[in-house]
Structures are given as C-alpha cells and as structure tokens.
Length: 104
Ligand code: FES
Image (cartoon, rainbow, N blue to C red; front, side):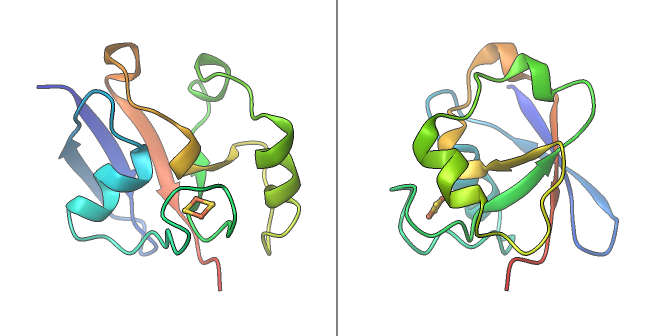
C-alpha cells in the first residue's frame, strides 16, 4: 500500500497508509492526527494547511485561485504551504511528506 509521511507538530515522523483518491487531509485525519478540516474539504476554511516538504512541492498540481486565496489567511505561509484537502492522493504521490502546522 502507498504511504505518506507526516511530521507532527512535535517534529515526530509518522508513516501512514494512504488511499488513492482520498484527500491528504482525510488520510491524515483518518489516522487520528489533528489537521483541521472544518469545512470538510470545500476549500473554505484553511484549517487543513500543511507544509509540503522540499522535493514534493513541484510534484503536486499547482494551487488554484481559490486555494491561493484561502492560503492568504493562514498565520504563517511558507514555500510548501498547501491546503491538504486540495491534494488528492494518487500513486505518484507515494512517499509524499508533509508537516502539520499550527493553524489556530
Ligand atoms: S478543509 Fe477547509 S480548506 Fe481544507
């Protein structure tokens, strides 16, 4: 099964099983991690903000205008900032690494 690597707010890495077609936000939440997701993936809250690790940013489809607009609301923006609900997991993303960040 495909995996993603999640680095929690304490800096601890976790390898999670990932399901094709699921939003990365859903995968993280399904494994019991706090990743926000208040709007359920409608790109309307930005609570699911994560930092995608170097080397993976360019492998993702670019953020669309709606995601870019929501990212303007996050407390700390980085080069890897994405909304995890807007990343649909595909086999090409096996090994994707993201860092959970404080969004409140
Ligand atoms: S869950 Fe609300 S923007 Fe991602």
